[in-house]
Amino acid sequence: MDSGVRETHFENGLKILTRELHNAPVATFWVWYRVGSRNEALGITGAAHWVEHMMFKGTARLGKGDVFKLVTRNGGSNNAFTWLDFTAYYETLPSDRLDIAIQIEADRMVNARFDPDEVASERTVIISEREGHENDPGFWLAEEVQATAFKVHPYHHETIGWKVDLQRMTRDDLYNFYIKYYVPNNATVVAVGDFESDQLLEKLNATFGKIPRGADIPALTIEEPEQAGERRVTVRRPGAAPYFVTAYKTPRASEPDFYPVMMLAGVLGGGSGLAMGRTSPGRSSRLYRALVEKALTADIGCYYRPMLDPYLFQVSATARPGVALEKIERAILDELEIISNQPITDQEFEKVLKQTRAQYVYAEDGVGNHGYRLGMLDVVASWRMYETFLENLENVTKDDVQRVAKKYLAETNRTIGWFIPTSSGTTNSGTTNSGTTNGGTTNGSGHPTASNGKGATAHKSRKKKTVGAKAARSKR
Ligand SMILES: [Zn+2]
Image (cartoon, rainbow, N blue to C red):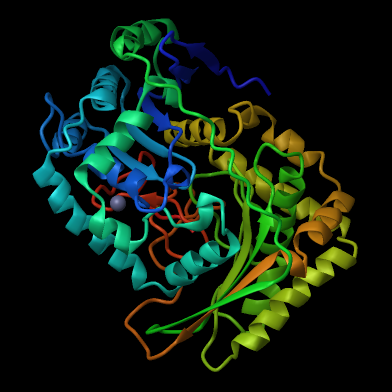
């Protein structure tokens, strides 16, 4: 499919993707920075997310909080979020107001102030944001599973960062991070909607085009050593119910096996289409039938998403009262063994493809979703995936799926996590924040956002709630 996307490069290294869509007088404007918690060293974990907060705290031109006021006053919505692989900022506005987005983003790419008092008050905000996540057993377990699965690669830590780092990081740590990574040569601008590309590019050239190129950023080439056996981790904390996760190292988005693994996730948990957020678990999916329908678990999730580096394929579930985690673990692992060893039916395979196609097309609604997918794919692999995703998925065979199931869902490649409540806390059980997830989607419109645990989680600033399409939901 030809998506009509135009790719432009400025001399300062900025990449621009524009796609005209004239069916409604709106436009969405995104800046994607190729920096996320993956780029943080120990000692400054959580820096990317904290910098995201600071980008709303004022520049020489705009005061603290002005970005939200300005966009809202002009009938738009905006937000930002940080994830392992990237940090993204966006505004969706009536198309005749798109200049506002350009001004905001060009300004804060270079002029964010990082006022020491603001850094200090944001420390409290961010620590309480983390404490909010900590009320979710899914968050605790996801964090521990990640840290157990990755010993060397910085996917080891969650986007929110370790609390000890949040307590000690300095204003200069944050500012240096900003100076290093928030540069035109480390960013992709994505604009989708009702505008003329030539005109828009002229405006971008007059604003972003004037920002000096930053120092070159060496590619991060850390590779996680191969895992040699099952790893296990247990978390004992207050919580409402026991919670289970099993996670397997799986390929990055740019590897050919990405597509068969997506189909594998679809058969097990229901097809999804790279929307912002995730679909509710497919009720006809294997895991749903084997766990939720049999009253072993209250929910079930199967997560796999496009990532820059090899990450995790995860299955997670909240236990029903009185059901032992051993039993849940056995039932989930049985399903994973079955798919590795017994043929998938044509009918089942077709159904997943159909669901995925529907999800993908559904997400064509609204300029915001286009901006999200184009930018996200560009950061983790290539925006061309936006055009080839469905075709590549349709080329996957049932044998491919079985092959990747055998290869990746191996005992030696997994990390299992148990959350065992020590008392019934006040927390919800795993399905928290309205969530969305990175891989699939809840209501079709969210963004990756604050983690609600189940697995990885893109994280988004909480105070700002709206999203182009609808209310923000959160990711997995
Ligand atoms: Zn935040």
